[in-house]
Length: 326
Ligand code: ADE
Ligand code: ZN
Image (cartoon, protein in one colour):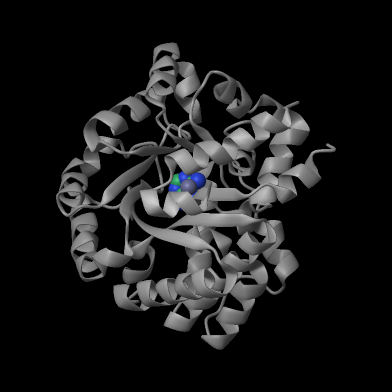
């Protein structure tokens, strides 16, 4: 496409990014060595060769294993800083990042270690790179609700650093109702809420998420297309969907980018956005995701720019912060 230059120059806002999913094989190796942790790969090529997925679970198994090299506050700083450098390169001016506390606390890493490293890198990114950011902590939906409640309690001392809570991991078999109580508690504490839904799971999961968890956004949400009435409702309400094109083709939600429905949803008036999800695992950061969609679907520059306007509309920035992005 001749639109790659336009995309590169377009300011972008990312709303669906798992920091653990930005762990590039080179850093995984370096941290494994630094922390004396053995990993089942001999070279970075071997790691990349293992990244062949056929569904969400086949990815999650490898992704949780990869996160095992993250031990110290400096590791979480280095991980976050490397992501911010990609943001700078891709002209991402604001990002709302996810992290999964339970992936780390279940291995004996303290919540404090994780959040301090992430927060320090984001502050430095604000000062040195001019990139603004928010932190959203996600509960792992394959774990029980008591574990999520414990995690919420661990987060309370850091409430000023965490704008919201989310819900990720295995969608099928773990419906929104499972985490109804912890989401109510989080809202009581003033956290905003988002949740993965309608990635692999049915459109009904999107309906239930909005109803039961009362979220401000839906992460993925592409399976809304199976329910015409839901699509119309999402368009009318401008409910944001944080769509991740290269993730969806990597995990076979769509076999080919040409089959992806994001442009169709955009033209139906939904507040769809483009995001990278787990860029180290799915083959690209923000510009790569925009380029892949533009290469597979003819769009005007106005339509491409609309993804950024939608992301600004969907973001958790305050009115004062919004002025900067105009
Ligand atoms: N955790 C990281 N990436 C995810 C995805 N695409 N779906 C569910 N959980 C995730
Ligand atoms: Zn995700």
